[in-house]
Length: 527
Image (tube, rainbow, N blue to C red; front, top):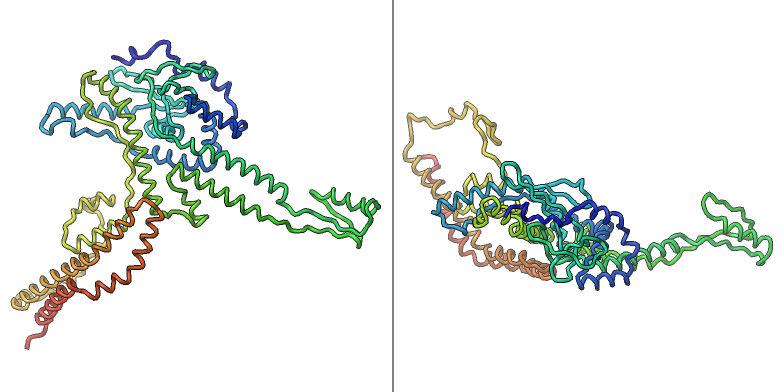
């Protein structure tokens, strides 16, 4: 079935009147964000009304923690690379026909996503591609759903193009367990949505949990501001010995009332102006509660707090653990977006291009960023080299992003050999074959002993490395910290045990000592 046949004429979609009406009746929901109003909105949300999305949208735009943490997740998705992969399990390796079909499907899907147009219904100046689409789809993590209208646009060559338009969630309702489109802001029940006309991303939402915290933080800030307005400046006091009602008393009252900008006083010896200090211990309570609410909001959105908050409080989870949490969250978000597009866009594109009965052999995928620990990988490479484990130069270059030098390139560490090197070589006319053979044999034994030393060292510390690896793979920060402390306390005892039982080292050093003796004999001057 063609996209034209699947489009319904009566479907309003992004009709100008629908957009205009929604723009005209927009309001600032923060002014109405009381505990009673938000409680009513949450009750309606549980019954299928999604009007609370207006409040959530305002929180996302105006609250610093929600905006920063949510923006961090969105930035991670928007900057990811994407690819189209062939499903190798969908056909046998020796099936040439299916392999050719898979290759053609891959090219078609790559062209489709490379030409995909993405915009926002309420901000149609937004123009983007897969990156913008991924960011918009991630809004489902915040609100529970992210909805795009799909406008299919086949080109003259018969290839399928599309424009997807991000819609506000309060344009829909969920009273029947499935989203339906509201043709007007004043409707209660919407109309059914055809699968190939809408892209719906569904996920668990975090704004439901953030709502109460945001409301508490907002009330706390308002109370803190009132406290600072009332007690933020010292209270001016004029002390005078004059009787109340006297001219001097009245003058002191006038002077006190005049204190403000560009003020000055003239007092007699019987009056004094003081600014007594106030007890501002309440500030600490406001600050501690505010920091706790901020950290809780960010933790709900990211799974861990921000490094900036951790650094300020000294109670963060550490860069290493935060990096692990970031990687897990990024993989989960990329998987959600990829699987949603596989089911709702990939299948339609393949069936339109290759026929409704064509098997789908390819799928779109966002590629999570690779987090590389250069120091750790270099250490592993060095240990492998010391143990005689061969490593491909091509693999080394690929992992560290280093290209192979071209002919004529100046190489790092390349030094021109002086002419005097030839003069230092042994005289070929008078070779000492016996000495050369002995030296070669000794050098071979010595090199073998050095490799075995490295192997022995690796065997001695392998248990330590395994223990540390298990600690670093722990998900709970408190459990990891306790395990690291135990590991550190046992370090001294482990070293003593290794030195007290040098079984591996003893054998290897004995062999190395023997090779040193042979080397000395071979290099000693002959009598």
